[in-house]
Length: 209
Image (cartoon, rainbow, N blue to C red; front, side):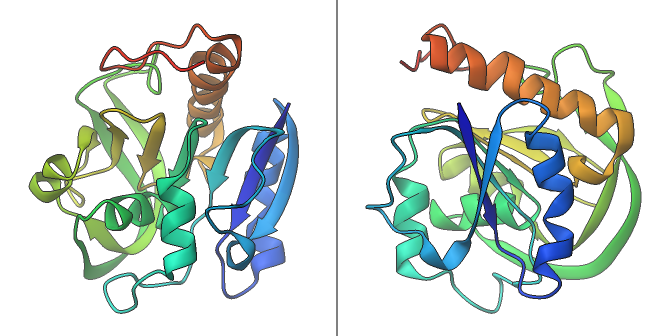
């Protein structure tokens, strides 16, 4: 099985994507691509999962291109959006992304619903934050997402789509040590691999085959 790793960075992209690729390669082959090559017709036939990276891109100031929006909307395999990827998921489905203060620190993430992504993890855990934009809880819930974690600095630290196998996290698990390792363990062992086998049950009850 292969995972499509979408590199959304605009500066130091080659260096910054290494942590994502290293995590993915613990579980599957990783195929890194720049975001600009993606469109609805992109051949996903041999991919079992997608990981979308962070970025210096500010979605409160610049809308994502239509081709990237359509690619995200067409996703049927489990996908994990990280930082910018998380915000991209929200924006694509009609929720708002706002600009705020720059946050660069370890943050206590408060998990309100464990589900498959946080299975076996403590209700409060430290993850690295590095962002200046954030997703608002109420609009993203109306847009089809369910908020499953928050922090004192960010109302939507993690979310999953109510009908699609899409997950977003505002923090950076690829740079969060053992806690980040555990989140990637859960993404693959609780979400991706069961989906490939046809046994994954979405938190809202839908099975993907």
